[in-house]
Amino acid sequence: MVVLSVKPLFIILVVFLSLVLAIVLLLPPSPFSQTVLSSNLTLGTSDIWSVRRMVEWRPCKWWLQGHLSALPLENNGYIRVDCYGGLNQMRRDLCDGVGIARLLNATLVLPKFEVAAYWNESRYALYAKASLCQACYSALRLTRSLENKASELLEAIPKPFLSLHLRFEPDMVAYSQCEYSGLSPSSVKAIEAARGDRKPWTGELAHVWRKRGKCPLTPNETAFILQSLSIPTDTNIYLAAGDGLMEIEGLTSVYTNVVTKSSLLSDEDFTSMHGNTKAALDYYVSINSDSYVATYFGNMDKMVAAMRAFKGLYKTLFLSRRAFAEFTSQGFSGKDLMQALWKAHLDDYVMGRGSALPDCFCEFKL
Image (tube, rainbow, N blue to C red; front, side, top):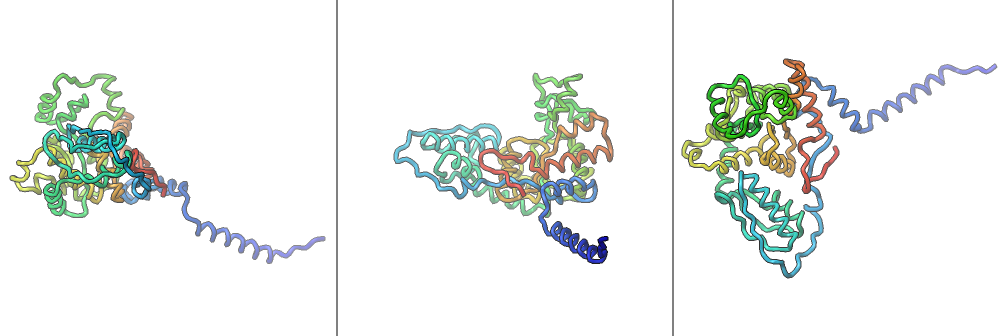
């Protein structure tokens, strides 16, 4: 007959469990556990910026610290880039030109801009892709006078603040070929004047087009999504937007601390500025804002996101037109719609979706 002592076994079991618990508590959280933690956050408990991210996009070291090959002694001639379109489209064209010039081992002649010079040009790096990256994110800057004016504007904005790039202008809506109900007569008239030969989609095609995320968010829809992300309604918001923004009351009736270029600059400064000059101010303020939210993913949004990542500013988010259209088409409304939008944007923010930047940035897992 074998007799076992219960007391020693109990002591051994307690010691073993204590060791296991200590190991678990000391281990760093895994990506999986962080995902579960993030997913368990509920609407209203914190704003979207309070969520811990799992991915960041940072400048690749190969163009920041790499050993660069020397240029050949002789080059293959000269090239010139003509830059057209909006401010950030011209910037993109110039950066591409720098990369092509290095690839061809050619001298880049100072580019011709469509209207005026907005950027200062500096020396470029030693091989093609590094040249493009360093041109866009290190060498290319606003002119001193424009940067000074943008700095004055930045100082005038109440802090902390969110920069909101809102795109609901007549030409934007006309180009999208989307129709909206409940717009004011003045907005409808402005959209019709901008349509030209573009007719809005109708019937099932209109439904499919909207569900694909092709329709710009209205200011009212934008305010609803910001509330869904638990961004307080007393947040200071700088409105980065072009001239002719429509239905702005849909935003300002909810978010009351909204400032614009026209409200902060003198009438003389504002009226004398070209459209691209105003865009340059929005660009500068947006990359230096405490947080940045875009309702679109155009050239400016991509450039701002890249520059914010370059500077280590990661409170950047792109609102999902597709998610909003998908949920509303399924009949979601009120708190149910808010909760669905919270989860959709939470996943995007945690995983860095929408901020992936080709060529010059690398994914860094946290």
